[in-house]
Every structure is written in structure tokens, then in C-alpha cells.
Image (cartoon, rainbow, N blue to C red; front, side, top):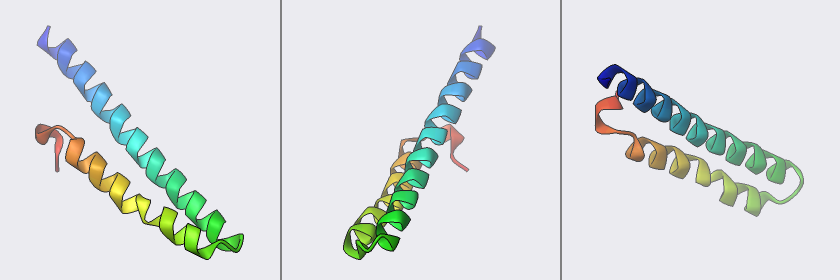
Length: 67
């Protein structure tokens, strides 16, 4: 029974990590597109979200899963 719970926990960790990486990548892509479309200030603002999203994802990971 514990191996089943562990696999569900691993799946959740993988999914949540993937979602944070996807959000960071989307933020980066939006930032670049804003920058090159002439909205430099908005591009910089959105680009600042990337490290914040990644930091939040790292902080919310279970302590046993951090490497």
C-alpha cells in the first residue's frame, strides 16, 4: 500500500514541477514576444516573473524531493 501512495506522490510532484516549468516557459515566451513587438517595459516586467515562478515552485516542493 505504501508503494502505491509513493507512486501517487511521485506523480503529483512530477506534475506540479512540470506545471511550474510550463508557467515559467510561458512567461519567458510572453516576455520575449512583448519585447520584440515594441513593448520593452512590459516585456521586462513579465520577464521578471520567471525567477519568481521558479522560486515558488522550488519552495513548494516537498522537502524530501529537493536536490
